[in-house]
Length: 493
Image 1: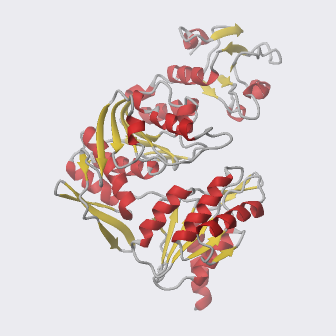
Image 2 (image 1 turned 180 degrees about the horizontal axis):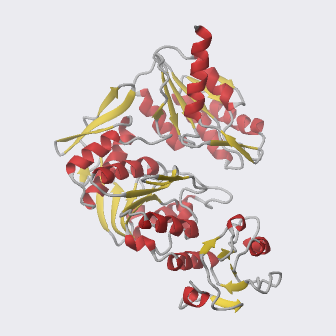
Image 3 (image 1 turned 30 degrees about the vertical axis):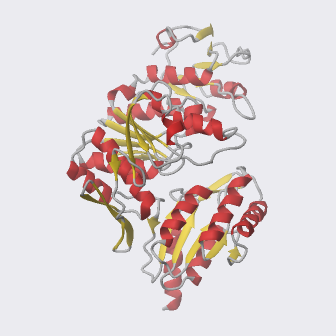
């Protein structure tokens, strides 16, 4: 598409260059620039994207879009220069136009909330697939649709990448896309211009507050609620204390779900914990109809209710609902590691206080001999998360193994010191081991486990790398657990 057609009636201004310049893709990372690309200079926390404009042009970018204050004087004459008052929002508008508004070709479902987004998305996708739809998924676990899987840098990708993904899904026959919509994604206009058939609110608790994230709790709440004006229907957790704030002013049709409070879709209180072939789950009923979800505890029932409510709004059949809820598997979300041992090993993404507390309370209900938490906290992130994780694991665990997570550019020792402070706040009597190397920490937990224990390895879940000193290295916990357990068994033969 040429620039003239691409920017028509958008408010985007052509400062210099040929209006007939052909644009074939949009990017905001100069390392992704290629011939025919429109490179967008996004304002950043530390630096402005305009400092990378020359690098993008050198890679072949045909045009650069910038904000006020940069005119592209350092760019070659062949590179067109565009300007917009808000480059982020303009990137969403231009990406949608270039890729043919792919969101309009599919039924879109957006899921927001502090925790439960990924599991709810996978449960709903499993239901819709069982109902005969071709479904795409976008979220923390990456982007996937039948025959395709791609890792993502963000839960909700930048608008240029999101629109390109939606185009690929639509071209490959997907009729539905279920996506996690993060508060940071809303704040950064990554889903600007998309219309959702259904939006889902799972729950709300403090998180993502700090430098580069949200300024305070009020801002975090605002961006969680910002999804629903763009939805035809909203599915809301009526048991969450913040649901009123989330729903306030939302013009969409509302359907509620819950367990403790009146709701349009309410599970009976007789939730039963299940264990089948080493897989933890829960059985529940709604209006006398029995359902089973293949994931443990009450919070899994909440996720199942959210998926059930959305599936009904989308017209899914009851048989598909039952099958999808029972069979869905989510990598890194209370994922059992098959070790064939007299104890249970679970891998989970819980990386903040709220998620860890919810998970550990759930596992407590299965009455383990001991509940062992193996966890760390990310570097270059809020220190409050470390205190919270340490506190809740000390309160609810019988033994803690504290270790590295993605330390990024921060010394591991500094992170562990903050976690130790949290342990003392939660329960100074809870024993713990401090093992900075995460592989060795996992081995220690396996080596010291006793029959009936549950080992919960927290924080990384589905991730396939670990970041140390700014360098990412391969690290797949399910593979590491299997490898370590096999070596342990071999040593005992």
